[in-house]
Picture 1 (cartoon, rainbow, N blue to C red):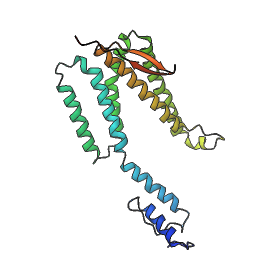
Picture 2 (tube, rainbow, N blue to C red; picture 1 turned 30 degrees about the vertical axis):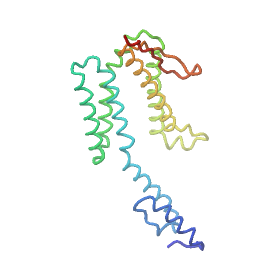
Picture 3 (cartoon, helix red, strand yellow; picture 1 turned 90 degrees about the vertical axis):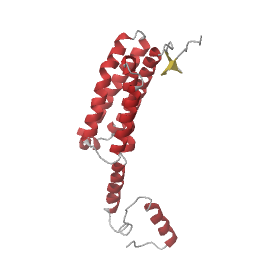
Picture 4 (cartoon, one colour; picture 1 turned 45 degrees about the vertical axis):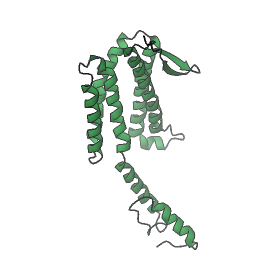
Length: 219
């Protein structure tokens, strides 16, 4: 039982707050120092159950990349987007029931590998220096972000004792955010070239690159 609490109204409010998390036993709170740890475990498990909201959009993003990169050489134009749409829908439905674990990582890596050869082809044939710089920044942020993640994962205990923690996992999120932006911007440039929209990479405030297009006037 909870002890040392005289304000019943405050206690009821705290119970209502904790009941927002399903299947949490309110009785032990406040009686043992380990309760905070157990509650953290519960929140972590609840997060793991909601991993689909993080992982499924990652797959959808790669399917969109595949469409942009491969659509010019697809002979049956309506078949490819239909297949990719159904693939993404089926994956989302299955992933809501099945937790793939390492299987998701392997599946995502395969989708990435399917995109790399065509992306490299676009890089070779692109004459725009600024567009090529986007591709280089994509690779650079991917490598640096991966190193931050590996460093934090493998040396977490040692880093925790440092006076200043570099927060490698947080840096991984930052670099991967820029990585996604550079990838999307480069693919925007490629897609605009496919459509004949005369793309050009310009910079917002001289720093942030984005693609400016000029659609041909309708005849």
